[in-house]
Amino acid sequence: MSARQQFVAKNGRAQVSVDGQIPVSLQQLLFGNDDSDDGKQLDADRLAERYQACMKKAICAMSIGGRYVALAYESRFMLLEWGQADGRGDCQLVSLGNDAAMADETITALYCMDIYTPQLQRRGAGSVCVVAGYSSGYMRVFSAHGHLLTAHQFHPQPLIHIRLRMPLPDTSRQRMTAGESEEMNLTFQDGTMVSVDGRSLYLALRLCLSEAADDSAGPMFQYKKWAFDLHTPRVSDAISFGPTMRDPLAQLAKHEHTSSPHVAEATARFLVAPCHGDAAFGVFATSEDAAAAVSAVAVAGKMAARVTGAVLSMAKSYFRRSTALSESGQSTPSRTDAGTRVPCVMAVRDSPRKVLSIALSPESYALAALTDSLGRVMVVDLESCEVVDMLKGLRGSQCAWMENTESDKEQCVFVVVYAARRGVVEVYGLGAEGQLQASVSVGQGWTLVQGPTQPLGGSLVVETAGSERRATQPVPATCVLLGDNGRIARISA
Image 1 (cartoon, one colour):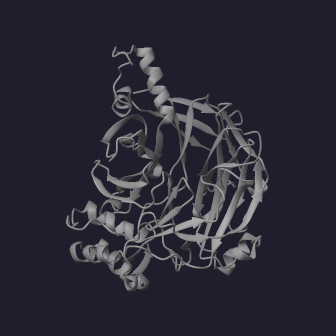
Image 2: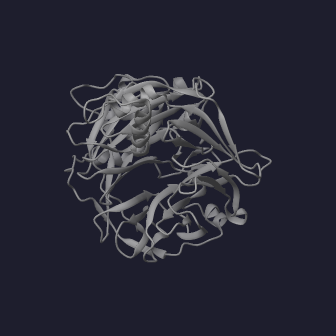
Image 3: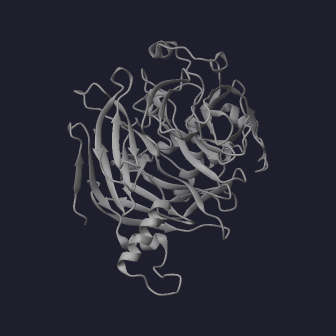
């Protein structure tokens, strides 16, 4: 076990605790053999340098709370458990996989996805899956044990980002906002986006995990495909932030109005960062709905017929809430289908500024942090579509979000920035408190990793004692640092 190390800000308002380590033996499993080009075995120093270089290229994702960490390199991935109870110590291997169908196929996106499982949830545990995106456009979902659950090629371009978007709960009844569903959003290199319906995906994966699937027919789920009016062959990033908020009280609470009337009644909204052109980023919106592909009713039917208890009640709830889905009965479109075109309703043009990455805040804040090519971090209010804050002097930075739920602290949500060139973690408040809260020097060679706050299926409605409630409530947002030497560190403020 590695020695615990702690970095603390001078003002004491933030700290970075190195609590975990990926053992060299596991790095060797992921990164391959330790032979040099001439076939000779590398010495310890050269081996450490090789693994360090590989770790810099690896893709990392973590589960809720950081209990599980997923790593991918080239065509291989591994799932690790970080600490048995307290999230400290050496990582333990859970599974190792390589399911590339082609010789040159590599993993280009990774998501460590928790799945709401009623039986395990009552014991404080849960199921976890690894969702991998490939350079071929394939999305493959693996169980915690590395078994392939489902594979789909939605689009023949590299899949570069995988995100889970959850609907806001109706806080008065702790239910899902009417008309919304959780969705998994897949962003492809050419800007195409696929939104997989979360409820049908949840039922399909629960069906696979319960070993109730019929081998003669693979799992099916509903999805929509979007294409944007771009004048560039590539994008750096793109996110979906759902339909326009329809609750008038929630809109008044924002104290702002949208900058574009075209966004006011949108059924789907997206923020896209093109690689070329004079736009730093654009907001795309439509009041029309994309045609849904692949009916998930067959999956829901199998689930309701073969699984009992809490899952059965959720399957029945799915039937009640998805009448439109059951009536569509549409066939699977070609994977080369261009998708429904979405127009650009507003754009920020500030050449040569280009947005490089987008980090979404927890759903209740409706914010996004955008890193750009000029060393700035822009904080965008997704309801008003306006830049509400600008953080400077952060060239080559990485962004994530963190929440603090302690009642004695005024600031609840923070933008966490790792300034890689300076080797510093900076924590910023927002709004009236929008200033640097703390700065922690941690050195170079780290990657900032955002953790999810809700499991797939967490927004489903379950019935208990004659009342309805949301299956789970969001947990506070957290983020960690992964070092190129295999160390893992938690950030707290």
